[in-house]
Image 1 (tube, rainbow, N blue to C red):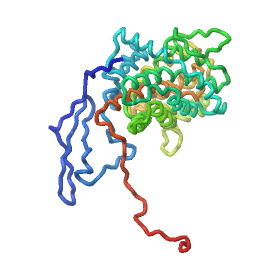
Image 2 (cartoon, rainbow, N blue to C red):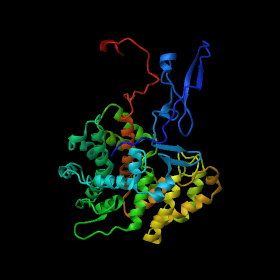
Image 3 (tube, rainbow, N blue to C red):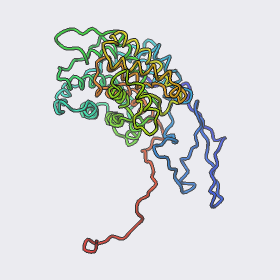
Image 4 (cartoon, rainbow, N blue to C red):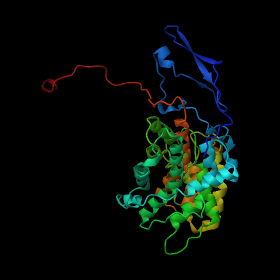
Length: 444
């Protein structure tokens, strides 16, 4: 696929400056203020140490822009999420996951012919090397699916040597297509391995989400018919998790990539970061919370506990670190969750019935409404995935599957940046000052 020019490039200007003043010495330094196409401007402090002899201290990098990017924009106060200028609401309503993948990779929505060629490329890269089947046998049957994914995705670099030259644009593109295509296959193989069923090969006559579902739930003994409603819900989950700016796993991929590591290794590093319960494991925590509540009759008690700041219990899947308004992804997924539950028969599953009752009460409770603690994307995605039959341990694997598109797009964007340098955060040292070495025979 040819690289496309971005229609809304970031603009930099040195006309505006920000002044730092040392109160002790009276010295002042000016640093340029850089504007993006949307969102707050930033203070460019790349020359801070050179000019002042000081670094900044920003634990967790919550006030630091680590890069320039044209991919995704988030306004947490207004509840806005856009990919390349297109709202997430429009993309989930009108696009397919592969259209969104093309958009993230190349900058614009594809033409009909471009989408056809891209879809064909992804479709015909879905199979994995047969020796990878043997690789799975090295894992215990009870291994966590994310542990397996970390291993097999990183191992792809041992199988596809012809696309590891990160300075060759064509090889970068081939690696990107391979990762997007093979992640569903590897994720499905991970699931099948955990339950002792034979692997299902991908089918070229099915769409991306349909193919994934048949590889997960099909068996060789009989044909598998994909439920269109379930495939549509899966497609929406994939789109809504495709990219989310500079979160922990995306930052990990960029940092690994800055060392010139191969793309398969970089994506594996993103998977390890995503594994944490504070990141990709959040929807799994939602199901644990529902199991802890146990029954609809217990909801008032747990709502009361959630309001008590001295009680360790928290409602998982409500509120978001970035979104101080309603999570726009949750609004899209809420309708899909209700459709899936209705199709499957909510009354047949007390846990899912409990989830819907909790949602209803929380949305009407003044405490949660005033604090904008609305259900987020993790709340609904966990409910849908459980309803579709996925075990909780697979939730983060599916997150990784979808986020691979964002990770590889971010990696590709970074590799095309002329000023690429290896990442090297600084630190504030608080250990002992220099002290003399004491020989063993003189130590107390």
